[in-house]
Length: 485
Image 1 (cartoon, rainbow, N blue to C red):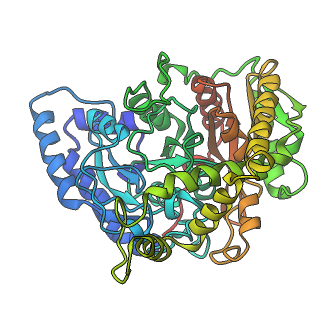
Image 2 (cartoon, rainbow, N blue to C red):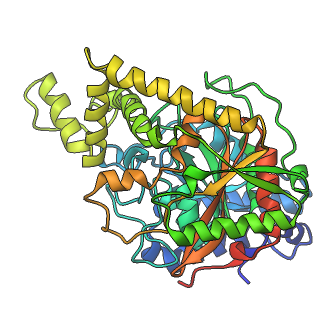
């Protein structure tokens, strides 16, 4: 058994009993990265020197019986759109290929306070725009279960690194499903918290009203540990919610007796692979055997979610990415004759095709004469989608469905068909528009590739989401399967 197969509590017990040191954990991570990352390609930047130095400090604390944080000694990876002081942060873009931040994001500070060890930065679709990780301007990440397939996006590097056993856990960001979908494709647990629960300060913005940072782990218990460490109000983030943070670990009771589950008919209808539908129905039987009850419900505006999302997200992206002009941020073109030409050439050379596509779509939607017809209408649709969730949650504790309509697809299979790529997020996007929490947990396999079960909860009710996910996980073995690399 690999050290990375141990649960967090088991690792801490071994550290306390002096059977293991933090240096052992870090060296195991470095060794595994050296062994498999040339095939998986999850890492953009590896910080071996920094990780080893941090491990030595923690080992001294351990020897002296010093205070230990919740994530003490655990090697972690961070998605490359989260700011890390002194460590390159590229957003998967050539535009920022040499950018080194001078400050840490709030979540990185919280990881340091919880005493995890940052191993490096993980690959992603450029500026978090993509559903396959093929839009990284450096190289695509490969799915550890089958290297010919995508790991999902845009947090594909974060999911693949955990699935491949390179790090103990990782952080990703989710705008329309970018934690949950890659977690499903890679057979790991991915949690998108309620919007506002985790600080976005230091996250390079794609769509500010949708972006949310969350953990990717091998099991639900570890997800609760990481969420406990990173959740909480941050005065540096104007959208941060000042709410009481419960004890997420105490919620993992395994008890779902009497729990009421709504299953949207739109999430198991047209476009959902029969194997995916079968795995979700099997998962519902497991929860039913534990005392939960489920009924079919309707989220009637689901069919409009993808169109509304791409208008809103692209509009916000066109505004957020205006700062990348080669002057304030980004690589500067060297052959410009004047200021306007400098902007034009820097952005033309710096951004990839998917980023340009979304900037043009968003700029058009926000332009004079089209704002009411597109952006404003999309905002109204978002309100209707939120109301759909409110009505179901008035009667049910959670909503359950698939995380993705299919298992992972082959690299290159959909890269020239952006519309098909966008539809892969059809069951994660409504959750993002509503701002509620959801977790993806492994629930089966199709042709050797993992499938994900999506458990959606009320706003700030991560405890129930994690409780249901943990109960399901304790009665299945899908999360124990490991890819052979």
